[in-house]
Length: 98
Image (cartoon, rainbow, N blue to C red; front, side, top):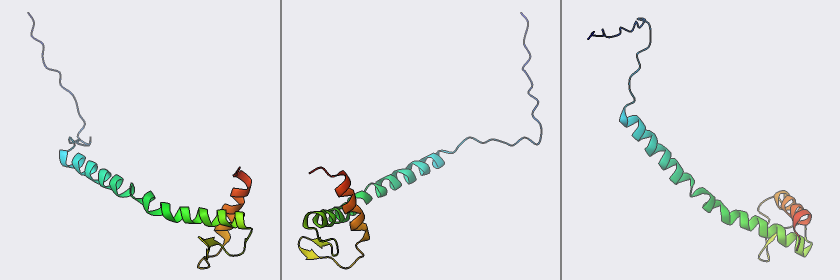
């Protein structure tokens, strides 16, 4: 039987040396992405009550017909400009079927 000689691979000297990925880099990526996911999953819960208040004020504008001052549970809400509430109320008029 003939013996085969090992193949010699000719690699140029200026070729970049690739090193295998270290396990700590992968672990760091997993920890950072999971912490970002955990932190960002709580954000919609914080803003949900504010969005509900804006929607209720806009609905109250449509139902009462008072488009000048938004009211929240009967209390006038004059801390902010009414433009966002007007826009939401216009969407109620266009898309709300009740």
